Amino acid sequence: MYLVTLLGNGVLILVTILDSRLHKPMYFFLRNLSFLDICYTTSSVSLVLDGFLAPQKTISFSTCAVQMFLSFAMAGTECVLLGMMAFDRYVAICNPLRHPVVMSKAAYVPMAASSWAIGGGASLVHTSLAIQLPLCGDNIINHFTCGILAALKLACADISINVISMGVTNVIFLGVPVLFISASYVFIIATILRIPSAEGRKKAFSTCSAHLTVVIIFYGTLFFMYGKTKSKDPWG
Ligand SMILES: *[C@@H]1O[C@H](CO)[C@@H](O)[C@H](O)[C@H]1NC(C)=O
Image (cartoon, rainbow, N blue to C red; front, side):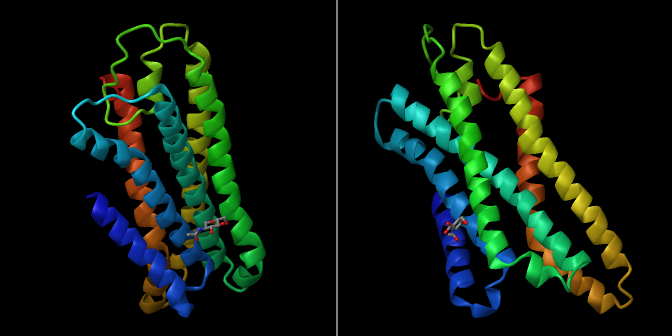
């Protein structure tokens, strides 16, 4: 699965660089998303692979902290990046004549860069809050990566500050982009429905399908996991 991830995203990155017809904001964002997916998967899978090869399945505190930082940062970045992409699709379909001006290179490169900065910044806050907690149990992580939620369960101190700040972050990283993406798609769909020809409607919608697919798969999985966290015990 890891090789498939590397290959699929690698091909996508190469194609969007090599084909000059794809030198557009949407493909820049998709390329960034592919790059992010490679980093994200690598950060969590590398230790899983290591665990298959090494007999003892332990993780040092510092490796755990790095993994915690990376996975949270990547997930946050992906959320924000998907919101940025929704804005690009909104302008492309609802304001097509202004799209080249609004989504110029001077706009979309900082938009992508700020997604990385926001994801990294939030992760820095949570990781530094989490690694200060005292650990005194048997420190068994019942999960395949050292995620923040899994690590918080090991703490033998009051974690209410962590829980509250995680809740606030969840609202910001899940709620705000989802609201923003939904609002964009309401406008996009309303605009598409007003296009008179079926051919035109199909064409307009097809430019959104890549983004919409990623949004549904990514947020679908996140909500599924987050919803389950409250009920049973997916993080251990
Ligand atoms: C992703 O976006 C950042 C910030 O704009 C940029 O520096 C980086 O080169 C991009 N990565 C790819 C693979 O396009």
